[in-house]
Length: 209
Image (cartoon, rainbow, N blue to C red):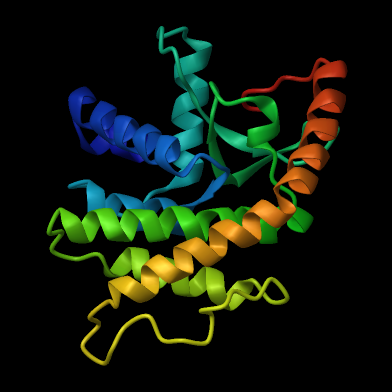
């Protein structure tokens, strides 16, 4: 974002910031750069790579100078010591437990995002989006990563040789991911809540670490 501020006027940098906040609001979990970019390529006119390190540096600077924003783009929290992980972005107005990202939580996070990205892909199709391929590619990445969290539709191709999406297949996958997430949601939520209590009790700096 520091580079964005140099290359663009304040209004353009603010537009990029607002686009990222909107994407995070839609995804509602700690979000990697590739996931963020997939959303922005389809639902925003911003198509350049997102430099998360520069973005967080800019947010820290704005926060230090009390520029008056109500919501900040923040790194994820990773453990009870409130160590931050800048490879994930979150929003400061989320509950603390929703800003926590740990390797053992990845299957849960990606199950959540399979459903979210399926929803987004359906919305993009209904709106006649010119190119929804980034969303589809991200779904395929999640499916390749989930391992033992097998979904009923995992082995079925989601597109043909012309990259045409089978919307019925996407809807079936969305339902399957939703059902599978429901099976593990309470365990996931409980683990994050326990960590959030530890983080709050230590009085650590919770925005940028």
